[in-house]
Length: 188
View 1 (cartoon, rainbow, N blue to C red):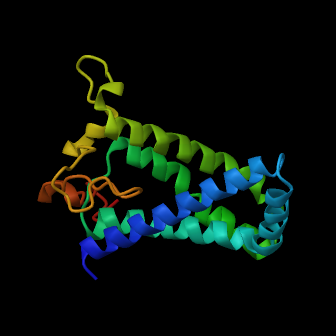
View 2: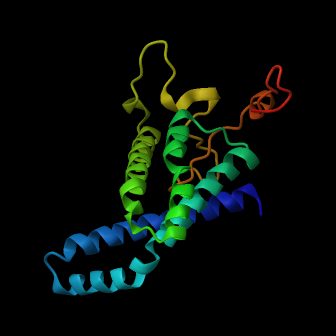
């Protein structure tokens, strides 16, 4: 599978996930006024409720592995906003894995805040990609999306604009892998 194939797959999965979220929101809000949507909501909860933790773990795991693939295999350099999103996303995998193992449906109280923080950062990231002027910046300071020479936009990339996968420019060879730590003899 090529990098192009993986980015296309990840983009398609992101679109499917976003469509599912929109559908869930429409059904949940509409259920207050429509008995048909209320019935549909109950059926969806009965169908997906028992496997909600497993689905959440699957989404977190695919997102984590996808981001690691894009940065470590495809050598796309994550910008600072990407890293902030990862900081909120990566802990979800072990948190949800433990919740699945223990059948702890109270996990939503500690997983949802992480997901909401990451989602907020992602929404801002998309806005900055579409409208770079939103990140006015402070004189002398790099914008959040420009660290390590990693621009948010790549107009010539084949999947530019694909929802969920916005690759950044490859880092120069000397920035792809950190040098060994002085005095330790291993990579950090």
